[in-house]
Length: 223
Ligand SMILES: Nc1ncnc2c1ncn2[C@@H]1O[C@H](COP(=O)(O)OP(=O)(O)OP(=O)(O)O)[C@@H](O)[C@H]1O
Image 1 (tube, rainbow, N blue to C red):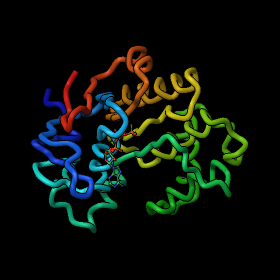
Image 2: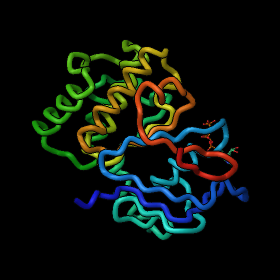
Image 3: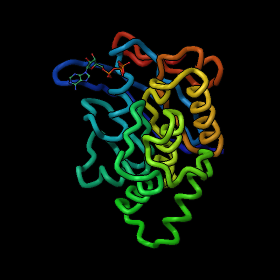
Image 4: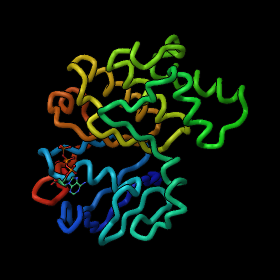
């Protein structure tokens, strides 16, 4: 069986302003993979992940995500690339002035969902997936950090992405809650979504095995 490639980087260089952050990056991520990106503070983990949704330019090399070549992607294609990627960050970034349900509805409407019944059903489906189906009416401040992060993951799942990018998703959580979030991400990857997760937390990497790449000295090294 041919594995479905989601990400394929070949000799990629990534810069921040004039500085080279990573060079000669070679990376393949297939459907359903669970990949950790580890490395010291400032080693380029976020830079790598941001390049994947065209937030940062690819300086050299070939960087394919789905069918998009990021080295030459047109600005007008970027929203369509991003629609295929679910993004989860450490600071939860929910809209604080509306309920969980309205947060999720906002994203669906922004991505052209119009039918009220379909919107309601999809919101319920993703909340069930993250175990938050009874909290749809809550405001973000009424939720714990772990619950807010579950809602962020639900939001990332709305458009059924084939790739989830999770940049330090456990950074602001206590160890047990962090473990539950990683366990949830692993379940999601088990259903066929590729997950790329950056972390500083080695006990999580040990407890929840996956492929590992390390950013070090401007290189991305398989472990
Ligand atoms: N907005 C920016 N402008 C210029 N340089 C930046 C910017 N953001 C980060 N950098 C630099 O790029 C390098 C890589 O940063 P990056 O955020 O990718 O590291 P990281 O491995 O994700 O770090 P952390 O573990 O702290 O999140 C760092 O040297 C940093 O100083």
